[in-house]
Length: 195
Length: 348
Image (tube, rainbow over the protein chains, first blue to last red):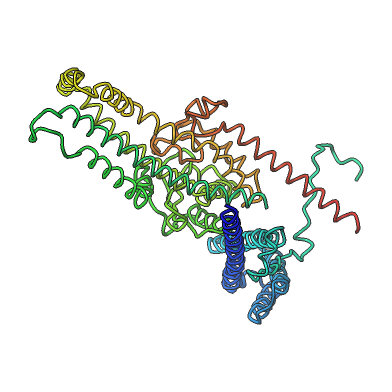
């Protein structure tokens, strides 16, 4: 009888170790896959930029600086990522590129005849979508990585973490303060008298 | 974290629910078949070997039919549903609208961490959408032309994210299986009703039963017969109720997951309001596929109500309740963002 109880207990523990281990491995792979997804989308953005620059170059003689900033930021990002940089360095380079692209879009708004051509409108949709994809890929990566990090630190799963060679995944922090800040919304509906 | 755990357990629950559903469906058909065979064998016991019901034809036929339905439903069920709504696959987007749809699906698939499902459009002016498919690799999302007309880019994101949540939860598979099973039961029971209550066969049955009552085990035979007939009569109603009851709760979950994917619950809330405002029923989506849709395509009254009766017969929770929950999420999000912005501004 006692032996039976012991065997059942050992079996239960072994089963738990197996599920906890498999859960961690599955999350680990999801994190790696999430990172690969970001990579795919970043590459897509890098490939789209020369197209965009070519299309708007003719009409934007006076905005050389803005265009050059975009090209420089793109090349910088590609160099950083080709060197196999970590999450933080990649995030830094990509946020520079995002900022440069943002300025370019603001400038394009000032050229109605440029926006009117179908080509630019299409490119803009493509780039909007790419920006969204990067943002969502980042969000997904951060969600899965957080889940992975929490799981491997929580008791009792943390006892299996060493066995699964689980180490905390680095989150993609938003380094650009402008991107993080949320615009304040005034809900009071009062006319602004004081300012 | 708790979201993730809920999601995982939801997937597990849906997977085992699918298996139970399949098992129950096959067993039920086996009972309908072999039960009939036993009754027929008992009735013809005294007769000669030639006319005796020795081989269980009914059981073999119905069980084979049930198995074939299950295999067919998991292989081709989603295509059949898409076909019945007149949807066409969008492979080469031509207009700006279609290009946007493809982009939005692509974006939300990334947010949900799923492969991109195939995209289908339905030429119907009423806004609606549904997802179907066996698993995430064969999944399909269908939207009506009306949805593309009324929704902004953000709202479309919310709706697509809701459908992707159904795919991720394995709701789409369960729903597709259910649709096929409801269809199969309806077909067989219609056929059986015609045989049972047809004048000729009814007389034959009536002639056989009283005669055999005298023999041994007659009471058992009567009980079996009564149970069997009741099963036949109730089968369509029970299968319909299964399809209806199973879908109500998961609409809320899919809404919440949509908000998690887009981080923008307000967009789905306004999209749902727009869908609700168009009173027209979605004509191209028939009863069999109603429980798959984001909003009830038939516009049935029961879906406006709460309580157990509505839970039993309604496919969708009341739209006002769904919108209210999403608005609540948006409000929480806004409060949190403001608090964070305040915390950032303080030290500066």
